[in-house]
Length: 314
Image (cartoon, rainbow, N blue to C red):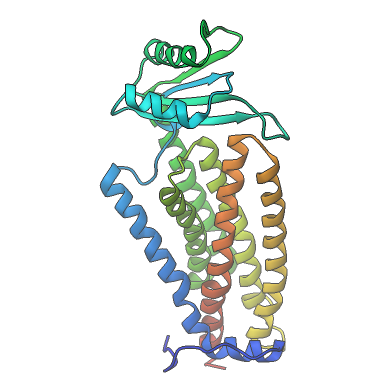
């Protein structure tokens, strides 16, 4: 794919001008999602070198304790106190709020490599400083424990599910379009949509849970929807119109689908107080934002190049 000699300049207004501008510069635009992908891989690689894992995992994927306590004590205060008492242990404290409001109803403590009796005693000690005579009972305290081997087993099974999803998706797409390059591009875009949220999670310090992996699997479906729509426009509908015009028709439909989903998930993210739901929505939103970049800059660019190449450069 030969690139034009100069970088693209902004198009003038008008649908026809935009299509002409895209036809002249689509090869340059393909570089943008590739550069973003390389940066994301660098972030993930750096995280792996530092921690030995591609992404931070919560107790559901690596094992540990989850304590739920009814209290008005701030999560940051409790996390700072526990971290000072259990130096070297992985501890995270989150706020638990009432549905539909911002009113705090309690805190959730996630801890690895700590015995329940030990952390319970330290939590009660800290709570008694706020309220003399406070005791942890069945009414205000609950604990769940996931063994490290069980957590690792969940993690491996989830990764296996993702790999199988990619494998079956690649086979179905290849059978459908019977062209290696367009089929590879569909799979590549789905891969990009998963890598970008993981890199953002590493930067933001967000831990991956079983719900997060479910969200990554859902991203594959969202990605394939838009990519297959564009690919079908390019390969299956050989109309009198040019491939650029067919691509723009597909973009309108695909962008409408994606933006509608993002708006709905964003509203749900701010309304919900469930950490699990928030994590699922956030990962999908981040993935869909990058999906618009990789689908309409990279996938469409490859398809335009591929169709023109098969047609002898028309």
